[in-house]
Length: 141
Image: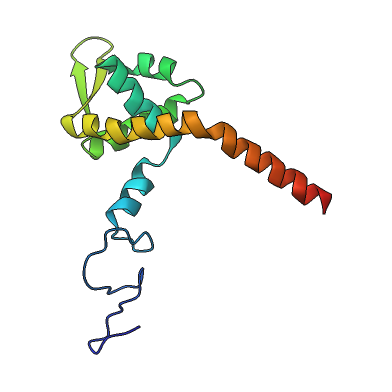
């Protein structure tokens, strides 16, 4: 629906007036923007590893995230540093030793990520069961 000034009042439409919290259709929605940036398994693993291990070097982070490539870990860390969630410290040695740790903002992110991991531990078996049954139902058709 358009108002007299031409802006829209429909969720997700350009020109929406008022508060955009909770409007996942809007590119300006804080939740959507956060999920776009942090919604990968690698981000969650890196944040969790740094929360558990304090300051860690790149090689230790890679050991704690089985399956992650060097390039993906590097990209994930760069993005977390750019977002202010992770701090990077370089020791002036040959070769340089690079250490990573959560910032105060990154530590605050660990709380909701930890809750999500706990929820997954309690519920993924049920979700997998439903998916298996749904697949069997489709095969019977």
